[in-house]
Image (tube, rainbow, N blue to C red; front, side, top):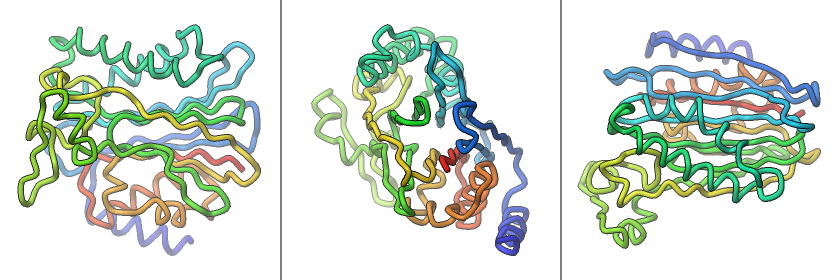
Length: 282
């Protein structure tokens, strides 16, 4: 593995010398649960538009792992707002502990409304989001809008927990809201010829045709559950879920695993801003 990591470092140095952000931590409820994240600026001319949350927090009598990736577009302000406000809004919901899925949906709607009200301040851009809440190391609740993705590994097998909200898959929904999906040769399908995802926060000029309703998946954590990956689409454009799982399944350090996934995506010529979180569960 040491030789492989050296090779990845050589490839990355040759391909990209952008600024990075990285870090790690562990749960107080179990010393076996650790997390690490890594971000790297892509080849675009604009500022870095990805933001992450990766932390454990004691709330009432529960230990919560709060993990999220926010992939901004047309500016970074909406993604930054989500980083500082979305989990707060989720945990403020009175029915979070009794009807968690419903509380998350309400908090997503509330946060999107706040962003739209602040459009003059935050700009015309938007952001995708994938959030994961690990409750006492036993229950995982994943929600997402857009194409950042959550994948869990059980006994070496990858399972996607999020939904890629692609305009081509939600064409009827977009048309029912009065919009259209363009599909020009050499380009990806886009909402109103502009946005390459069918759901997002913000994007005030498109919001009448664009949903911010999250898909939600609940997964119980058992002895067969090894780790979770959250990553922006810059990684998933160049590797499959199983390829990502296979790449890091023998790496014990969560931060090193997150970095290796980004290194591999860069070696495969991904040019997007990239962010990745890995949560090791055993």
